[in-house]
Amino acid sequence: MRRLTPDAAGLDEAARLLAAGELVAFPTETVYGLGADAANPEAIAKVFLAKGRPSDHPLIVHLPDEQALSAWVEQVPENARRLIAQFWPGPLTLVLPRAATVSDRITGGQDTVAVRVPNHPVARALLRRFGGALVAPSANRFGRISPTRAEHVESEFGDEVAAVIDGGACPVGVESTIVDLSGDKPRILRPGMVRSDAIAAELEQPLCQPGDNEGPRAPGRLASHYAPEVPLEAVAADRLHQRLAELLAAGQRVVVLARFERDRSAADTALSWIRMPRQPVQHARALYAQLRHADALHPDRILVEQVPAGEGWDAVRDRLARACA
Ligand code: TXA
Ligand code: MG
Figure 1: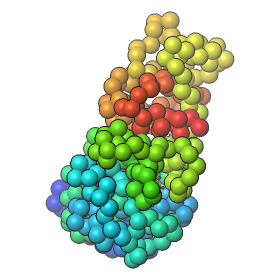
Figure 2 (figure 1 turned 135 degrees about the vertical axis):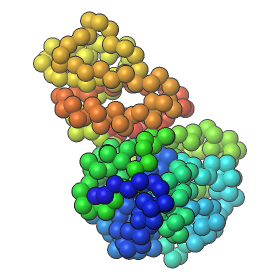
Figure 3 (figure 1 turned 90 degrees about the vertical axis):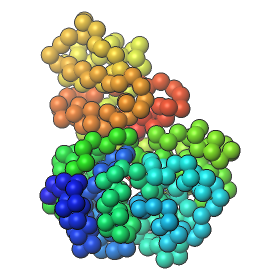
């Protein structure tokens, strides 16, 4: 895999590779996406192959702007217009009734399509240069932690992926919020940093929350996902030192991710302590890189402090629950 710089030459080369049916990973504000020409069925097939993703799990179509939407959806309902006006470009994906021309390979055979306009400057510049839509799942192998840096993408894939554009660390750090607007009531399929209370306020309507078993298959909705290789356990802050003591006493090597410092009694060579940010926006930005870092230390177990209840933490809580499952 080649590493491209996000300048004119790098973006031209990326657009050329995509037009030739190759896969190019690129930064978005959320995580790195594994990009392919959304109009090229063979390129889309390569995405599923490289990720090891089951073919019935649908992809998000990334668009340069709102004007490009009409080619992909049957119509743009009023509630979608409101969310687009408020949150696009940005980390919000809409699930809408698809246009008849959209390939089953993208939608997994469903009658809806997921679309978003990212706001990362490199993603936007690439979409403009390419001049079409890109499918872009997170650039990780199926079930693994999403990449937030170009190095993460390189460690996931070999030469099945032609190139990655290095845009540094992703500012949001967890995947986009997904709202399904194709049914009677708007429904959150995946919480993200566009908060569901902000979406409900914009729609002047309560939202159905994830958790019920209805709705289309979505890998991000499988219980076990976004997972490191080492077993991960979430513990309440006030139980963390006790649980840690038990594990260390049992001879386990442990990495802790917590929003507070270790107390001095917890000094132990079998222990690494990773200090996480206290606030949700910063915590989300750091989460995947720190999980990868913890994993790479090859402990017997990763202990992570449970995050507080409350809206701002929904996305982080969701990803931690899946990583533990
Ligand atoms: O932030 C993001 O959304 C990143 C960046 C790269 O844009 N992309 C991403 O893609 O997270 P992926 O493929 O890893 O996750 C897309 C999620 C999956 O859970 C998929 O099942 C769901 O979107 N999805 C796609 N199309 C859908 C549809 N028509 N109905 C319901 N869910 C859908
Ligand atoms: Mg993913």
